[in-house]
Length: 275
Image (cartoon, rainbow, N blue to C red):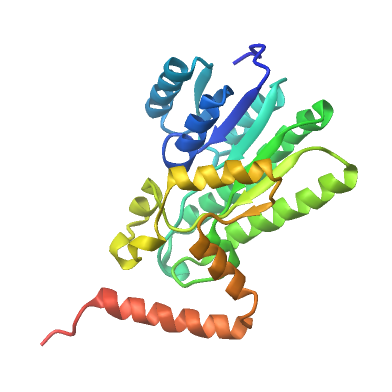
């Protein structure tokens, strides 16, 4: 997609074919931004792009790429670096792996690290050069409330999301030191109604309904927080209270409570003992 003269500029959204990524695309198209939608599912991307063009009168392109692969990541890097009107990058692509770490597929674990860490780092690097030259731009890295604590069966997911928070915060400090007017945000949603948990095979009934949020609510909080230049964004008051309380609980107590809760969940999933 070549620059169109759109004063709003172009937004790149990864993981755009569903869930939070698709909602970002819808909201930003409604604001008048052109879109480059990145994900692996080509047909779904192209369908979404056509729908947003028709509905909002903007230009949208579906760009099929596997960001966990060298070739796929490089192709998106090159597109970003060659874009002269990049306004925003939404690093949203990601997935989770449920199960004991030692029993998990190591290739799949590595793929998750490449997607959450390497892709986020390299695409941010590609975007920042042009943003710095133009003196404007926004980068949103979609993290998770899981970044603030650790849990069994979710070991490396929490670790990669902690990296995203740390990277985003360090980048913010660096940009402020340079006096660069670039906005960065780490978005940390909790349980959200998307395909994410379905793919992981998580039974939604385990989590109380009041703790689930819609993708629309999560994205709305992110966009409002960008107007306030808020760095770490935790959608939902329940999750904000949870994270705030963690700051006052010693880590060894957190670990004890996590183990106790995990054992309770495990017994609940196992069901009543056989007679």
